[in-house]
Figure 1 (cartoon, rainbow, N blue to C red):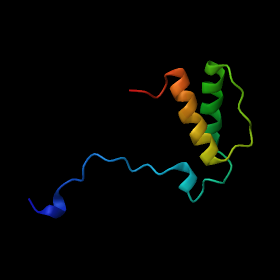
Figure 2 (cartoon, rainbow, N blue to C red; figure 1 turned 30 degrees about the vertical axis):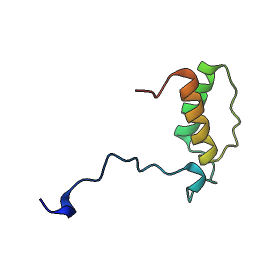
Figure 3 (tube, rainbow, N blue to C red; figure 1 turned 180 degrees about the vertical axis):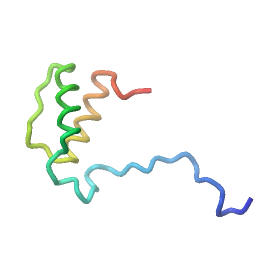
Figure 4 (cartoon, helix red, strand yellow; figure 1 turned 135 degrees about the vertical axis):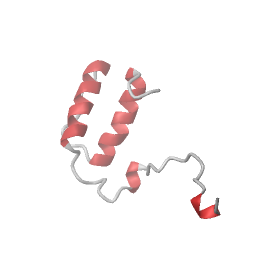
Length: 71
C-alpha cells in the first residue's frame, strides 16, 4: 500500500467556531430549534440574536449540562 493511500490518524476535522468564515452570520433554523430544546431541558433562556458561532458554542455548553450529545 502506498503512503498516499494510508489513512490519517483519527483526527477531528472540526474548526473552532470563532474561525468559521460564516460564524458571524445569524444562527440557522436548526440551531435555533435545537438550542431551544436544550435550553428548556437545562432551565435556561436563549437569546434569539446569536450568531452561528455563538449558537454552536452554546449548544456545546448545553449538551454538556444536559448530557445530550455525549457518547
